[in-house]
Length: 163
Image (cartoon, rainbow, N blue to C red; front, side, top):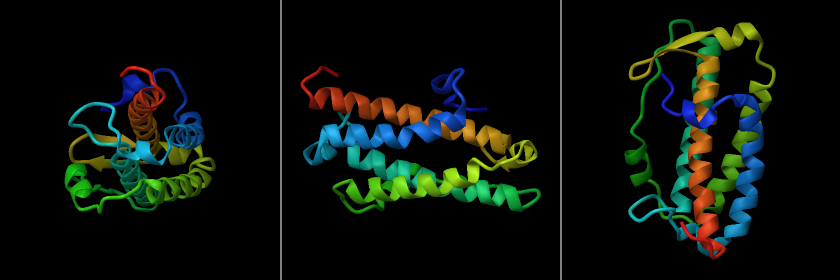
């Protein structure tokens, strides 16, 4: 089950994963350093926290992809995103953005050479059930689009638009 499937729609996951870094760079540049403290909605994560969360996801999913490719009968360990964020120091968001962009480039190098057989490899997620590597790509792409829409709302607000 992909809770972000509606975000992906008919789009190809790998194409989304390739495009998101450029969009993130453009939006964060548009928003500027002062905008890192802005949120898309009261009580929600600010931009710096969203970038930190995206970095956590990139790190975790990159690990899951590599484990699923190399380990049979893998059961992945879920993690509590809110507890991970609570442990992060306050940041200007730039370190997270640069790390995220570098890690995404590294992960894309792997994802772009996956064979159809690789994409069919399965693992078990205790909360989401049995998944394939393709399912994980789809989940990550839909997740990216979810947070990209939040960042777009921050950018619209930063440039004088309404949320």
